[in-house]
Length: 105
Image (cartoon, rainbow, N blue to C red; front, side):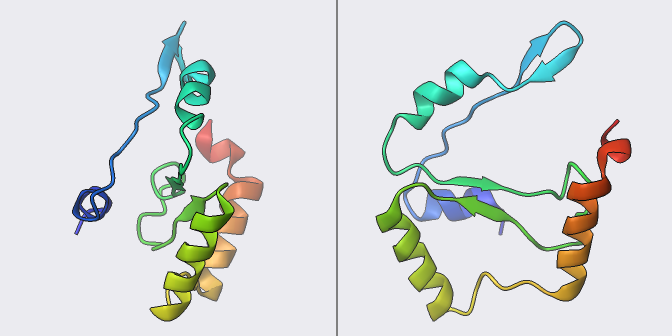
């Protein structure tokens, strides 16, 4: 099941913040992001899979500024034994984020 299906099946909606082309580079549209982030109950889901070509590493991150939602998600993760990673994933992520600059370039 694709992640998008999980969002739709739980009656959530996807709010996109597309990159904008500035010159010859794509950049985050921070003004658009700021406007969309003003909604309460925002949850940001991200993954390093595409950026660092780590599609074989099943890992993602969730940024949850709302404490109530964060606690609810944490309890659900604990209930279903989710949110755990393994040694290989941790090493791959650490290497990607610390030393992946040349790969990105």
